[in-house]
Amino acid sequence: MTAALPLAALAALAVATAILLERSGRAGYGWVAGSEFALIGVAMGPVGLDAISADLLEAVRPAELLAVAWLGLRFGLRVRPRALAGIAWRTRLASLFEPLVFLIVIRALLEGVIRSGVVDLDGPSAWAIAAVGSATTKATAAWARARLGAKGGVSDALEAVSTLDDAVLLGAVALLVPRIAPAPGLPAFIWAPAAATIVLGVGLGLVVTLLLGRGPFRGDLGWIALFGTCALATGLSASLGLAAVAVAALTGWIVGIASPHAEALEELTRTTERPAVLTLLLLGGASLTAGWTALALGSAAAVLRVLAKLFSGWVASPLLPVASRRGDLGTGLLGAGGMAFGVALPMAHILPASGADLLLSSAVAMALLGDFLGTPLLRALLSRAGEMAVQAEPAP
Image (cartoon, rainbow, N blue to C red):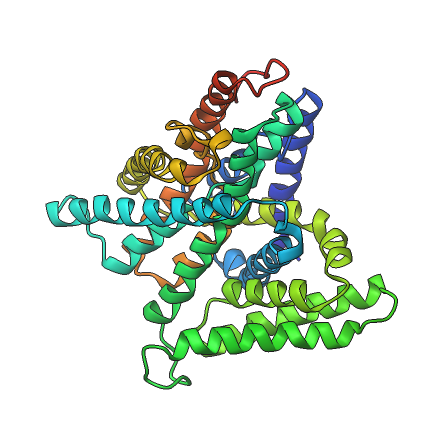
């Protein structure tokens, strides 16, 4: 009980901060992408006041894994085919192409850093940093809609990209996790982890569909089916050395396809995403144990992310419908956090110490830079496009 008090105090402090910021006119999680929660976690963790012990962080790790898997499940429900019917196929293609281009570019940049000998970073850790940086948080597009009255082709494109680009992140993690921490229970074939992820995700999705049936929707049964399946996906993935978030995302997607209650399930669980994100931001910040060197390198990785996003947005823009095409589209894609931060946390637990420190440092720096730099650049982009209906509040 005593060990849980610092974590409870940390959560209360973060929530109080968000309430104060929102009452002053802020939207979203406090700062646009919620990076203040990661910052408070850093201040209360080993790097700062050391109020959150390593033993406590270890004790809450199962809940942390479950929260990440829940975000994956939510993603799968959110991108069900019926929900994406209104998004043009060109926009869908660009939404996947942009993070793929980013992934390749940032990995190449990191390879140059590795070969220069500036930092001791292995290949899987570099891929993990690139994957985490590839996703754009949905909070920025939602903030633009709610606070700026953003409406038009560019706003639609930014919303679509930030909704769909997590698919590339999840695919990368599904391939990386078995490579970094292979499980002895799987066959020694290179395709075995991918096949196991697909079979497990599809199977659990069909189980949820059968449990809910085709009769009238029952909210209590929906909660039991989704939460129980998410817990099962987390446990089975851990024993098989798979990425639970990828399995859960596939489960949610199958439910979205096969169940007539997909819309009701998505609406039922919509309010759970914010607490899960805030919890992971807090735990991620508190888990940071790196010294100033790793923090500086993480900040450098965040700057590289900005450059790579500007490039990937420019490359992907011609794929979009004419009303959405802009060479400076990448300036609206700098927000980070949410799913990306949630994925970084469990990935750090299986990487070597040097890679884990740099991954968490990079995730924190990306979230902060996304709020402080990404928000004003997004506002400027929408202003140039003539899609901003109201004057924005000052950036955090």
